[in-house]
Length: 414
Image (tube, rainbow, N blue to C red; front, side, top):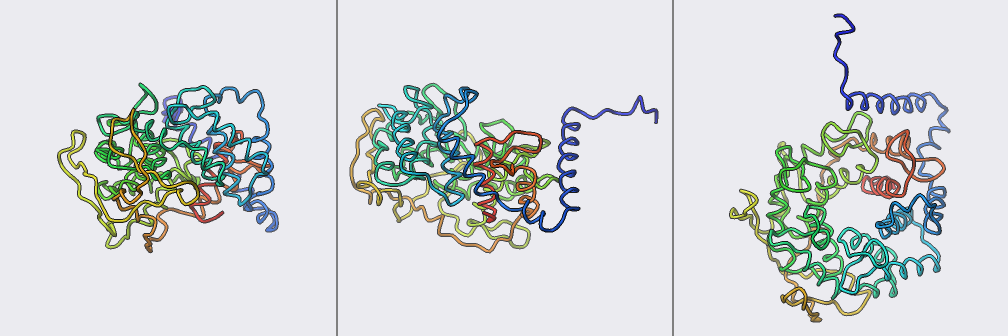
């Protein structure tokens, strides 16, 4: 064939080949070095990572001004990473973080991206998880759970889903951050989870993954959020788990890392968003005879959902939800009232849903190439001077440091 008439690769194909060349070049070098050097390169550079993270918590360069509306996320990415490494920060840094997040807390509930900014579910999730990671009386008691519950009720949409902020977008990310925070703070109730499962079901695509909203493309981040949310409300059995697993399994690329969507490039952060799906399902399911067999079906799935032909109802059980109340004041349960006038009642026994998921144990073997993922993260994403990056050729940052370490953690390598 005339070379001039040969088909040129698409932009996506060219980028894929470039990434493969970079990654396989690193692997080739690794294969031909001394064993002692190999051992060093495959180590998690804990001290360097801790130094990189702690430095960012103390002071950031002016270029970080573009993340002004994401400051609780910076706190979360850094402090969660430090916790994953088994380290902690000194009292001054801890107090500074708690004081700062308290200034991000809106007087009407929830947390904004910075002091004086509107409350947002994403930054609320980041702030609450940061405070719980720090622990201690000051951090945990700083969370106004009554006002936060009011904020969550205000974000609840008639569709069953949640908005990210007042008049904001509705998506699976909002659903997960809302119920995750509510579960963590022991304020999850019938009002918050009503019809939520139906909305998430409507976002499971023909591929098997979960999209951000009905009709969109399956995505690793939304798949994790959707699955985790369904677990928290005891409706995970309503998803088509066989197709979901098929989709996630095939997101691991030849490089060893995971891609976020079909025909996209691998990215270190998806070691958590995609790898975390396996960790969640490992506790839920057993695999035999090439079929996915749930260990406990929980509640029923209805068929009257306006979003899905396989909708779901909220299931009820007998056990209460363990939250952070043992570390703070009495657990608050919330009466079903108008969200603007919701009040607290210290009666944790009113919470009737069964959240025993974490107690499940199964014998599922890994459904992905675990060592290949670890090799990609340690050789291609890890910066030997501290921090992690998306992929070779990219700069290290706190986001990828957090989720690459999280990926190593769920892969039991940390």
